[in-house]
Length: 212
Image 1: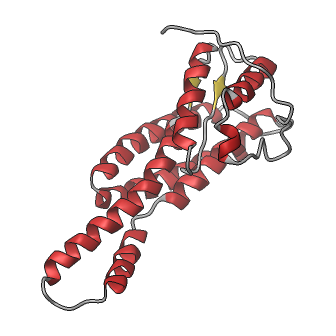
Image 2: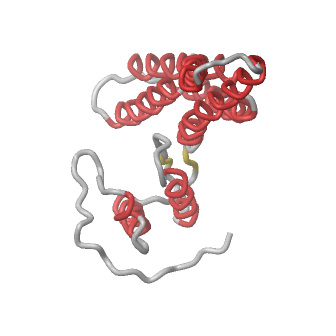
């Protein structure tokens, strides 16, 4: 991996609140705006040898931002990052729309010359596709993962809480995997990622069994 050092200038408005640095996409797309903020986090907490969780909700620019963060994390010596959940979220969001479109086209073919309201046809296809939508499951999975990380740092007993969160994460992954087969090519990738996440959760649960 070729590591490149880039000279940048600070932005005076990068002052995150309790919900992070909430800015519109055009702001984050300014030259090195995202990179400056991410690097400041790595410099503050110390990145080398640590594990970070990269999450996302599939919105516009999320995928490109994730790639930037992953490259910077690797350059900063991060040991491992749980990017799979973020990737699952982006796939789930796109798969629902693509699946609905495929259903609409297939239904049009089956109906042939039968007169049908296009708007009604699109609505029915969207309703069927919604049954295979795993966006909510992946969102909850990400939330559980964040709570898991916070619980590790919290004082007092954490074993039961961590074990419970592992069970909840497994539940969300299992539901996501159950919905995946109907989503075509995207479903195959969701299944691959989901199985990997499932294996990681099992490892976590084995470890938390020894935490009081």
